[in-house]
Length: 388
Ligand SMILES: *Cc1c(COP(=O)(O)O)cnc(C)c1O
Image (cartoon, rainbow, N blue to C red; front, side):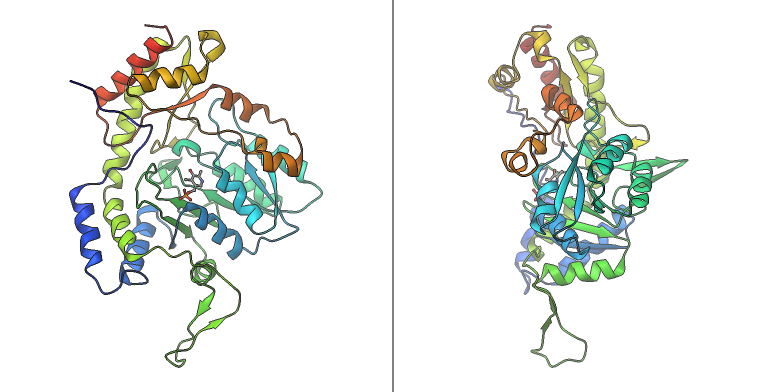
């Protein structure tokens, strides 16, 4: 029997998801219909948020949030360098400048001390927003990050694109990511590798009713229809975008969201199996660290490999894994090293982000995998690294 190819991540679409999309396709409204609000309400409930606003994708969620918060030219925002491009780019979309923060070399997450240093570097400029990223679904130290941001006069916007279903332990309680307890807004993505998938799709949650209203307006051209106005009438006070999520995709998202507890449990079980299976490879392979209090729905299975010590390059390891039917990926190239940002801000030294990047490799992790698939990945990795 030939083993099937295991990508590093993929969607889990089941028959009832397909039925939900088919039903939406038979409706009168393919977009701006009732399925949008239904998905938003279910999402807000799932993460314990006051308000949820659906939008075209996770990048649009970040862009809309910057616009709705009034971030603009002359402002400065802090973004960890270990993230996807979009977290930094959204700051540039509105003409503001990025100050990159370093991260913990062993977890890839921004720590309070990393934020402190970035705030010092930004001074004397006023920092408008801090955008912590819950990399891999691990929840960073939000209470401490929020306190630092607050004392600098900055708001917190969580890039929670990896962290749907993750929680932060607070005493005996688990506070879901997206609840808005320590932030003005949280952004999510429904790209196929994320915890739930709509192909393209995104969501913003916020505790602030005014912000939610402005997000909704900006999501659809900045148009408002005042109550009691003539039936054709609309007004635009500021130009927005078409960043809507159609009903067809909201139907899929809503159906997927109902599976979040099962998807979370599956990801947790697979990650636990990885930790166990990886112990014999401990001389050369270490799982990424998890911060205290983080109750993750793991999004990525990142391991840290000392490639020099095993005498193989990352490229050789990835190619040898691919030959064995196993996909892998690197999350992420430090954003501050991208040509655009290097040209804009000059060469910068962020040793934590660099050390994380030098060693990290993401192994397959998605709910459709079996525990035996994990054993197969780890056996192949041991063989490829010459440890077996
Ligand atoms: C996926 C992702 C985004 C962007 O989401 P899209 O839906 O692909 O636009 C932003 N930030 C992080 C950390 C992501 O992983």
